[in-house]
Image (tube, rainbow, N blue to C red; front, side, top):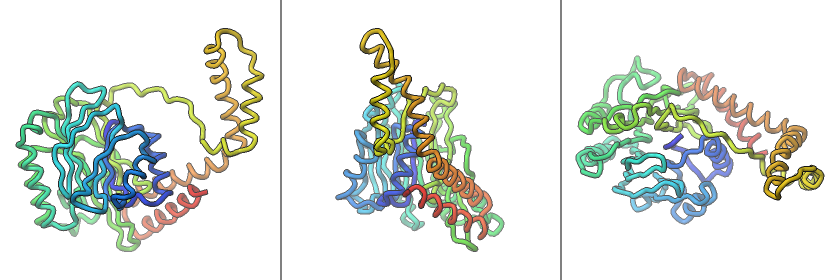
Length: 345
C-alpha cells in the first residue's frame, strides 16, 4: 500500500490505537491521513509520535480543535502543504519510488450541506490552479455525501437530492473520477439495529494525469475494524512484486520470565564457525524456529482467539455494509465487543 485515508472516529482510545498499529504494521503505508481523531491540539504530537515514531505530520487545528484531519508521512517521503481549510488539506508529495511529484487532497466533509459547498468551491479552485493542473491529483477521504441513490443501502426509497447534485457538479467541474476499486461497495454503516443503513461516503477521486501516470493503480476499501468507516487504500502499481516480510515476534514474549534465559542458552550453545558476522547471522536464523515454537507453546491460544475474533468482526462488518438489517447490525456489535475484550487481554 502506498497511500491511505481513514476516518477513525476518535483516536483517544488505547484499544483503538492498538488496532490501528496492527493495521499499520500489516499494510505498511508510507503516507496518508487520519480523519475525525477527536484529539485536542495539546495531545496530538504525543499520540502521533507514539503511533508513528519518526514520522512527520501536519494538521488543520487552525480551523478546528477536534483534529479533523491529520496528514502523516514517513521520513522517506517529501511533503509540502499547498492549502488548508476546515474540510481539506492539499499537499505536494514526492514518494521515494515515483519520479513525479503528486498532488493529494485529504477530505473530511461537513455533515451540513451548506458548509459542504465551501469544499466544492475549494476543489473547483484547486483544479484550475497551476500547482494542481501540472500534476497527477487525487482527492480522497470522507465526503459525508453519496453521489447517487444506488450508493445507499435503501436505494429504493432514496431520490436524488440537492446535496447529490452539488457533489456531481463539483466532480464534473474538476474533471475528477472514481479510481477503479475493489472491496466494500458501501464504506460506512450506522450500526443502529432495526434502523441500520449503509452508504458509500468514502471515495478516492483522481484526474486524467493520475490515470496516465498510474494506469495500474487501484483503490481498496477495506473492512472497518476499529471504526464505522472503511479505510481508503491506494496501490499505485498493482503489478509491483511484494517485498519479503522480515521476521518479527510479539514484544509480550519479553515479559515471559522463561524467554530471555531460553534465548541466552540457545545463543551460547549454537555451534557455528566462521567470521563474527557470519556466526551472528546463522544464530539469528536458527533462533527463528525456537522463538516460533516458544510463542506457539505459550501464546498460541490467545493469538488464535484474538485473530479469529477480528476475522469474525470483519465478516460481520462486510455483511452489515452489503446487507444492513437489525440482525446483522446486532451480530456486528456482539463481534466488536468480543474482539475488544480479547484485544485488551
